[in-house]
Length: 406
Image 1 (spheres, rainbow, N blue to C red):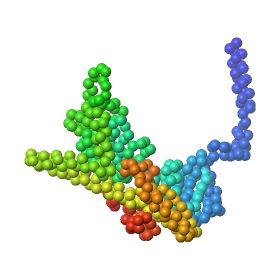
Image 2 (image 1 turned 30 degrees about the vertical axis):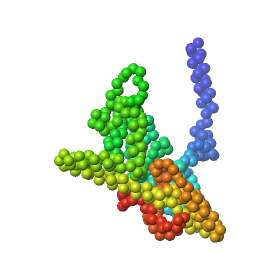
Image 3 (image 1 turned 180 degrees about the vertical axis):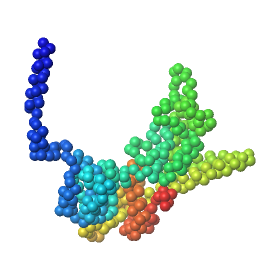
Image 4 (image 1 turned 135 degrees about the vertical axis):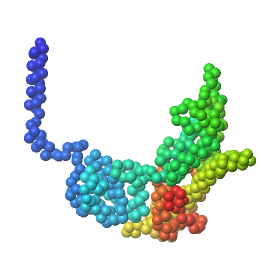
């Protein structure tokens, strides 16, 4: 029986082999319909360049390099798209542009009215698609943010980017080490926890049926630098009140951390502990500097509220309604007095609308705030195209020097 089964297995294998096309037949089939669907390779650079030369114009726009799987490899912008794209095909081997072309299956582009519109569109495309060859607008490692977590017992953290997680973010700031020192200072003064997120909380007003006495997970509770919500040494209300003070401090509305340091310094002087008092003085200086920067940053964001008119290619002028560094609306520029009255009336209504809530940075705002601040800092003459409902002159909305590192 086993010999017969083995013979049948061999015959079946021979039949499958006979049905398989030979190498020459497979090669001929491949040549007829190459590349197969779903396995397309990059097109030759000559074909890509021919597409650009045949159809692209020298106008402001944004272009995308598309890979074989229809994934966006790179997004760029230029005020002369055709010239910029053709420069990719002249890049020497080994440069980034040459590498991008080597992996590109097709090139797409779209025209926009102006350089400003190109910057905005490029930023939004990069954030939407996260192309592997783009670095700018995905994450600027030079900047950091202070995060107040949304947890049962909130913590203060220093992070590199803003996420859609319901937490509050303050910034952006330069100097991660300095910001970490400020966060550590505020955390210690307000006695907030700094343990991992997975640490279980045991509140003082929480019912304990077994009479278990929890112990703190670190030494900060024993030295008076943590309320120890993990060991039942405070109620949830008491802890949340301290976290609220941290939020107010980073919004520039609370001075309790500074008041605590001033009180400790005064007591150190009374006890003739001059070295300790000097150390406290330095800590006060760092906190006051951080608070001034926070207030300046908040004022900067508030100053980014205006109607901005940008001339466009071929007369396609655009108007942008900007509120707190975020572009809320975009409209074609009016062509008559009635249109301007209507647009400015819309701007007045937008700017007069009260926006409640914490003065923290939202995830969708960060990139636009940085882009707008840099745009006007490098082009101060553009402030002449800005209009505010109250008619007051618009201060230069460049971010504070400590933020921009200039």
